Image (cartoon, rainbow, N blue to C red; front, side):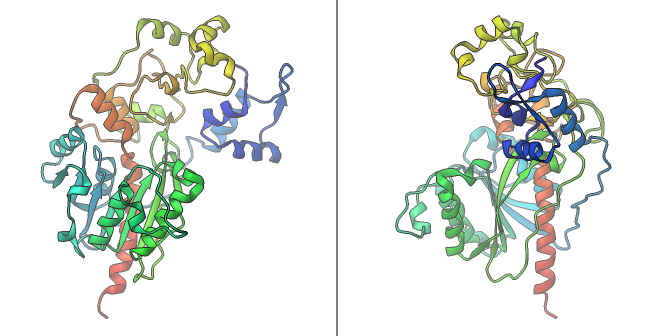
Length: 412
């Protein structure tokens, strides 16, 4: 296994930003050395892994709880629902789903299969009117895709975002008028178009009567999810409500791949057997040589050059290529396809991608949640989902907010 890691490689391996590693270096927690050949600053792999293990000790006692009991029956309307990761999480936190909109027919079949009582509105959000829910729903949620807006003047208004899916999200919020709305997106939204896209979204929510809580990126590993996935959360509170929304507190304990796939705290059985993608023999022969937590740089040099082709000379980490996940680490973020070369997620012991049920476990779906469609469609649905446990923790924060809101608005 490769002894030294570049800044990019160390950052990717432990799921910490390059700036965090530089700070640790300045603070003396992690010492970089100069590589004799290139004079680049590199890190000792063993030191990086030890520091990460100490920083996120798996044996730490988790004293944090975000659990809160709903004091009323609270309802949620979900947009861009996908296969139900966020909806199931919200359900587990005590929120009742009144309707879900989703355009993908296989995801809709998944929702109907598992929750026949849910009202699934299949089709393009543009074709639906939600005014029947005006003042009848407590929270509108939705993972709208990140799209650039065309600017008109200095301040972006709702009309300028027409044609984007965020426009539809805001339109529905305006039609429904809930006390609180929650949008979720990729971390990249922070820097999309130099931050202008996010500022545009904030100004649109302001225009329709919502104050936006300072945006946060939640790391799934801090919320009982054995995966290094991050989601940006955009929270709008209706302007007539003078209450502070608080994000869920991060947990002390971090779960790893073993917790996802084996009997333990997260699941009371080993992962069920299921279908899964397979590697072609040529790729399997290469990945057979990669150790747990290893990647393409752990291969013999001649195989590295052959496997990487022209990319071999381009430099950079590319730590997702030929990457085998270790039992004692959280999984890297799952993608919609389990065997893409740039984002390899190989099983720790067997040389194969994760199966459908393993994918679902890493996203903290319950084992009885069935995915419809072809195997490729199932992987896509799971890869696109909000992790269920993250949805639950965000759900608790909404319940806490709504409890306070309805207590305040009760007639004295």
